[in-house]
Each structure stands twice: as C-alpha cells, then as structure tokens.
Image (cartoon, rainbow, N blue to C red; front, side, top):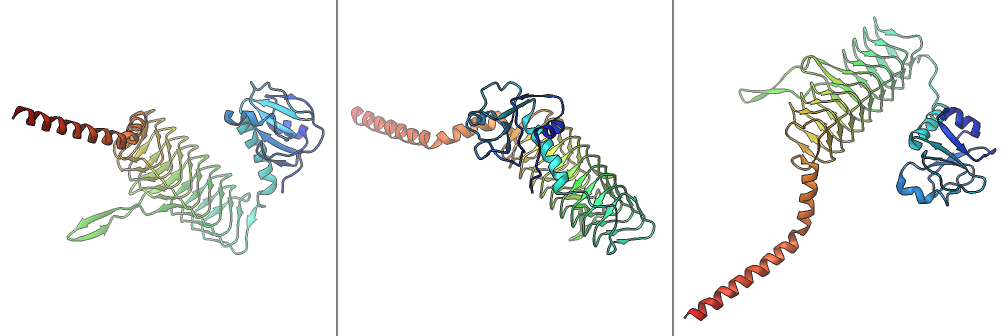
Length: 354
C-alpha cells in the first residue's frame, strides 16, 4: 500500500526549510517508529523522550529536530526540521492522496437530486445520496448514503463520508470533513412542562460550520431553537461529541471524544476540551481555556484557565488535593493512634487524681 519515495521526492514535499545530513540513494518503502524501523523505512523523532532510540534505529531516513546533532548510523540520513511530527504529517498527506484518491466528478445514477437543488459540475455525489430541494452543493465529495436536507449548503472541497446527515437549512463551510454517521441539524433538546406534560418546543434554527471544520464519526450537532448553532473556523470535533442547541464554538477549538456541551454555552477561540468532559448550559468558557478529560464544568471558566475535576476547579488545586487524598489512609492511621494515646493519658491522669 505504501508508495515508493526517493529522498529527492521527500524533500520536495517537505520544502526548503530543512537541512539534510548524509545521503541515501535507495527507495523509501515504509514509515515506522524508531524502534521498529528497518532499512528503507522513514521514521521521526517527535517526542524528546524517545531521543535515545535514534542512535539504534535502523531507519534509512529520520526526521529530527533542528537542534539534533548526534552522530548518525552509516548509510543513514537525518533531516533536521523545525517540527518533525508535522513534517511526517505532510508526507502522510501526500500518501493519503495516493491511497484514497478523490472520486471523479459526477452524480451516481442511484443518487436522488430533488427539484431546485444546485450541484456543482465539479462535485462527486456517491451512490444512494439524497439531496433535498433547493440545496446547494459546491465542488465537494459526498460518499455513499449521504443525506442533504432542503435548502442546505455544502461548501467547496468539503468531504462527507458515508451516512452523514446534514439537516434542512444547515450550512457546511469549505474544506470541512464530516466523518461517517455524524448528524448536523437534529432537533435541539427543548421541552416545556405544561399541565403535567412535556410539550416539545420547536427548533427552527440551523447549524453552521465555518471553514476547515472536522466533525468525527457519530457526533451530533443540534439545530438552534432559533438562530444558529455555530462551529467556528478551524475547530475539530472528535468522535461521539454532542453539541446542543445554540452553542457557539469559537475558532480553532479542540473537542475530544464523548464530550457533551449543553445548550447556549459559548466557547471562546482556542478552547480545548478533554474526552468525556461535561459542560452545563448557558456558560462562557474564555479563549484558550483548557478543560481536562472527565471534568464537570458547572460555572464560567476564565480565559486561559486550566481546570479539572468534579466539579471543575483550578488544575493546580486539583493536583494538590489528589496528592493529599493519597495520604489520607496514613493520616487516619496516625490520627487513630494519637486518639488512643490521648485517651490513655486521660485515663492515667484520672487514676492519679483519685
């Protein structure tokens, strides 16, 4: 599956901002971690903790940081570059284009395109897709079984994987990647308790994802009660994330798997939310805030804060409490001994006074 690369081709991908130490005229036939690599493989040093593995690695080409100056093995090439991990990502991006080529433009015969829908001639519409009336599809790729609602919009260069569903009037920006089974535009969870019954509150808004947004598999973003639920430019949602109605996610946020964000909460730019965190409704998470995995956020979070715990508290406080908590059994044991000593001394004093 791995295409064969020459060192020259590799340098073309990486650009001029790198320094080559050594020479290698063979082909690069695979990518492997430092300790597993063999001759003909490409590897990289992305984490300083693995620095000691470089010397013993059998990889033919290794991407290393700019400040790495240790000797290399005979016949091995070191490519010094600012960010080896991102450099490897550039190579993998090139490989991805070979392994998963963009489908040709056109509409599969089994797809259904309703009256009034506009589909770019450069779009690729896969088998059993359904495009609702008055929808607008740019030069995007819709793999099989994708459903686009009435008057919905999908921007140029977006890629929708099988079984995605974009609801009526929702808008997908340019260069979005919507992975399998994700839902944009399901009803927000809204009810009013009237005379002993839960009455449904219609959700008549939409969902808007701005450019360069990724939405992971089986994630759900609810349409707004009115207005828009919005995912900001460049934000990335992992698998099985739940975004409730009228939530506003800022630019370049990262939201990890199984996070739930309740209605009308606002996330500033650059917020990071760890896996399985829960965020209550009508809150504000300031720009650059970091929410640790499993945290329960029940109040506003200041910009740049790092919080953790149930309920959320400053990260340093949580860490101190965790250290003290581990000491509790020994502290209780010492307290019990002290209590026995005090009681014994008291009893001895009472006998002496009689």
